[in-house]
Image 1 (cartoon, rainbow, N blue to C red):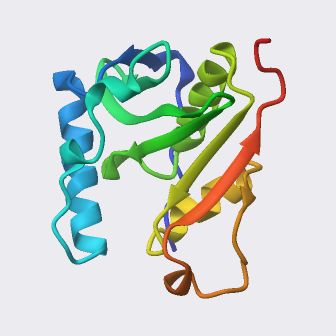
Image 2: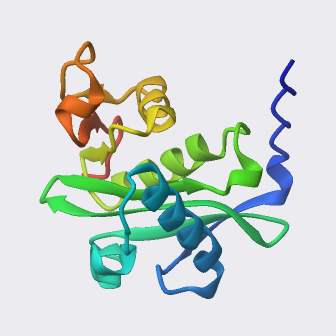
Amino acid sequence: MTAAPRPLPTARVTVLHTTVTDPLARPLLDELTHEYSTRYERPVDLSLEYPPEEFTPPRGAFLLLLEDGEPVAGGAYRRYDAGTAELKRIWTHSAHRRRGLARRVLEALEADAGARGYRRVYLTTGPRQPEAKGLYLAAGYRPLFDLSAAPETIGPLPFDKHLENPRP
């Protein structure tokens, strides 16, 4: 029998808008790098993927969820096109999973992107990340691929979602 997820104590969880280079982000990004390298059986270096300034206002954002001042989850977005933000690096520390934190990161990123005038969010997740695929489907994201196909035959799995109340 598995333990029930711990409830999320909202009074102790705060959202910090910061940068990819913030030392608070390092443990999450290091664990994410290790996870990707292990799942995909190849070295991954997130620092080479995009320059940090892609995730700074006004075109992007990077945020952390802090619980009692410690990072437990985070994520970012960058400009994809004039009306679309691309979500990246959404991650929950392995010690804090199954508590709804990734969903809170998604909601915070969507709200921030909408406030900056984006009308749509786009993202891709890897074919070896079924947890992420499930999260995005549960959060109302539309798969831009055939759900009945084996994920490994598709490659990166693209999703999108139209934001309900973006700033004009």
